[in-house]
Amino acid sequence: MGEELSVIEFLKRYRDVHHRDTENTERCKPIFYFLVSVSFHRDTENTERCKPIFYFLVSVSFHPSLLEEIMPQPVRIGVFGGTFDPIHFGHLAIAEEARLALGLSQVRFVPAARQPLKGRVMASGEQRLTMVRLACQDNPAFHVDECELRRPPPSYTSVTLASLRAEYGPAVQLWFILGADAARELPRWHQVEALLRHTHLAIVARPHQHVDLAALQQTLPLQPDQVVLLSGPQLAIASSQLRQRLAQGLPVRYQLPEAVRSFIEAEQLYQQHEEAHD
Ligand code: ATP
Ligand code: MG
Image (cartoon, rainbow, N blue to C red):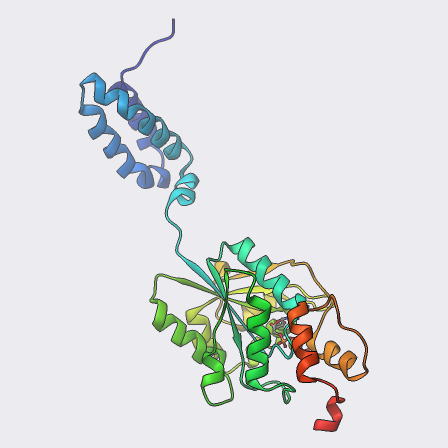
C-alpha cells in the first residue's frame, strides 16, 4: 500500500518543493496559504468536504495558466463602425465571427453620419439606420447605436469610443471591429492615438486585402495583446459593388438580408450611378 499523506503533510512537502521555485510560487502563495488554513481544520467532516476544493486548487497551482482561465474575464463589447450603405452579409458575418472568437457579449453597430475619409453616401442616415436595424433584428447580441448619426458630421470613431468608454467605465474591454482595408488606413484616422487608449482592435481579413500587423504595430502605439487578426469568412461583398449592381438593375439577393433588400426596393435606393450624384 502506498504511503498515505495527510493533507497537511502533503502541503508541507508541496511547499518545500515549490518554494524553491520561482515566479510560479509567488503566484501560488495565496492558494497555498488558503490550503493550509483549510487543512488546519482537522476535523474529518470538514476535511472531507474540502477535499474537492483542495484537489482543484492543487491542480490549478500546478498549472498556473489555469488560473487565468478561471478568473472572471472582463466584459467585452464589440463596436463596429461603418457607412453601411447598404449593410450586407460581409458585415454581419464578420461581426458574428468577432463575437464568437472574442467572446463579445454584444456587438454595437454604429452607422456613421459621414466618414471623413470617404466620399458621399448614397442613402440618408435615417435609411441606413433602418437597414442596419432590419439586418440586426434576428441576432440578440447585435445592437444598433445611433450616436454618430445624432452628432454633427464628420463622424470620428475616437469620439464614439471615448463616449462609450465614459458610458461603460474602465473595466469593460471595448473591441473595435474593422476590415483589413480599413485597418491599413488607421494611421490616418483622426486622433488615432486617443482612440487606441480606449479600445482593442479586431482586424478581419478581407479578400485581396493584405494587412501588415507588424508594420501597424510599429506605426501605432499598440500593445501586443491589443490587436487580433481574425481570418473571418472572407465574403467578397462590398457595399460599393452592391450599389453598382443595383444601379445596373442587377440582382443582389443572397448578398444582404432579404428585409434590407425589400427596403431598398421599396425606397428605390441606389437606382442611379454614383457619378450622377457627384
Ligand atoms: P464600400 O464598398 O462603400 O467601401 P463596405 O462594404 O466596405 O462599403 P463599409 O461601410 O465601408 O462597407 O465598411 C464598414 C466596415 O466593414 C469596414 O471596417 C470594412 O473593412 C468592413 N467590411 C465591409 N465589407 C466587408 C466584408 N465583405 N468582409 C469583411 N469586412 C468588411
Ligand atoms: Mg469600404
